[in-house]
Length: 100
Image (tube, rainbow, N blue to C red; front, side, top):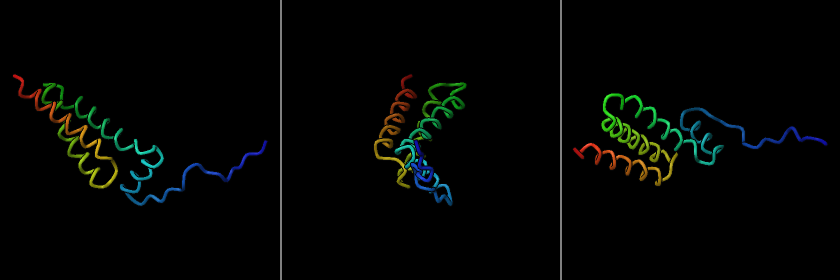
C-alpha cells in the first residue's frame, strides 16, 4: 500500500493579516469559524459582565456581540443569518432589562 505524500487536503495558506487568517480559518471549517468565535465571545462576556446582575450582563454581551457581528458581516466573514440571530438576542435582552 503506497501513500501519496504530496497530496494536501487544503491549499497552502498565504496569510498576511487578520482578514486573510479569518478567511482561511473559515474556508477550512466550512464557514463555521467566525460564528463560533462570536458565540465564544458572547459566553466570555456574559460570564464576566454578568457577575453582579445577570440581566445587565446578558444585555451588554448581546449588544457587544451584535456590534462585532456587524463588523464581521461588513468584512464578509459571516452570513446575514448570524446578524439576525444576534439582533434577536439583543432584542430579547432588552426585554429582560425592562421586565421589572
